[in-house]
Image 1 (spheres, rainbow, N blue to C red):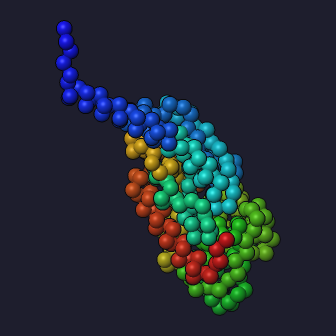
Image 2 (cartoon, rainbow, N blue to C red; image 1 turned 45 degrees about the horizontal axis):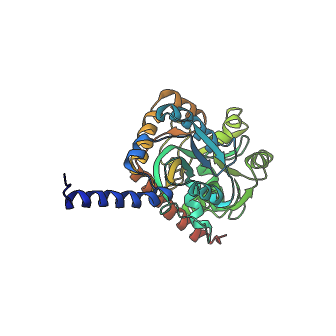
Length: 336
């Protein structure tokens, strides 16, 4: 019996073979098929943090990902890679491929770094895809517990009457806290000197000795000394009172209209990560961050647990890049 030739069958086989041939190099380059995205994750997920272990950002991501691992069925491995501008951490994540098994923790500091470095070596908006925030937190503007400044308005009034006589301490030049002091300067019109310190303990020591008149740092860093009344909170930096410290007035309420600084931590994935992977992680984060136990643990760190959509997170990053760019330009700060 002779076998007839079918042009249609031959064409179908050639098409299938061609498609498989095209998929091979794409897979080698890290691109995932819809099927593999649905099966995600297939191995432990690495999250690279641009800060040292034990800090607020590090503890936050460990609390959240421990529960997130239960949701997605794989454990998370936290890798700390501190360094200027978060460059080391970002490049480590990008080298891990875009299949969703290598993620980055970004913060408000990422928006600052975009404006502080001549060559950041990565673009958080182009090289990464936003997933969701983990939480938001304010900074506290505090004085020595025995300071004559009982309110932020007292501090501002004295500063306006005595230009150049006040010192405001922050950690590291170019940090969000440091630029928050620059913003306070331009917002209030007070001419004070900004003194950067290597770390918070050195700054706190200087404040209690009276070397600086005001300091700006996270609630978690100041909590014990606030409770012991060794230092006094004059204001919180956010636009509305925080559930973390509802008794502390906002800077806007306390005499600095227009002053607004809210920091955040968030998860990002390398650009090109399958949308199904982003969606799965974001939905799981929404559920985790709504849990009472997670909210309580983060609140103890001074952080309000809150998720966002990828679009909301992207808009937040874009807005903060512009905001801190304006602050840096007005302050005349040179890029590194």
